[in-house]
Image 1 (cartoon, rainbow, N blue to C red):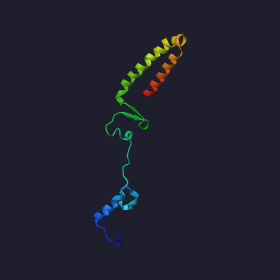
Image 2: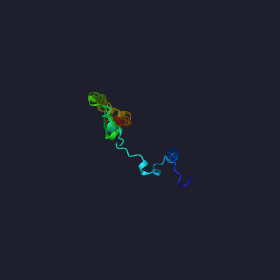
Image 3: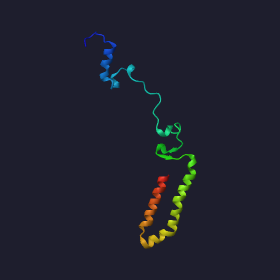
Image 4: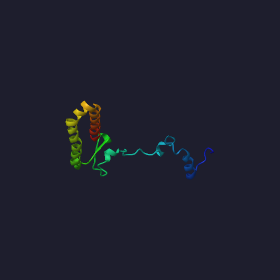
Length: 118
């Protein structure tokens, strides 16, 4: 384009389209303003959007709402009571007469279930 030639608004717009993807090629006045509100994570806005679950450990763990305590108590009792009976009455016999691996593997599976419930 020749020096001193003015561009029509249409031509100026068409010329700028080639570099539109590069924000740094535009002058400061043409760059988009930074957003005032920063994007927040899901666990930070969960209660604001209507979620009743409790989110723990910066969103890594999710627990039910406060009304779930009865269900949690039932779950823990269904897990712990049979394990107590197993380790009191069966584990010693299995350890001595069958193989020690059965009680060991049962204990490992119990620990994994407990850790996943927490």
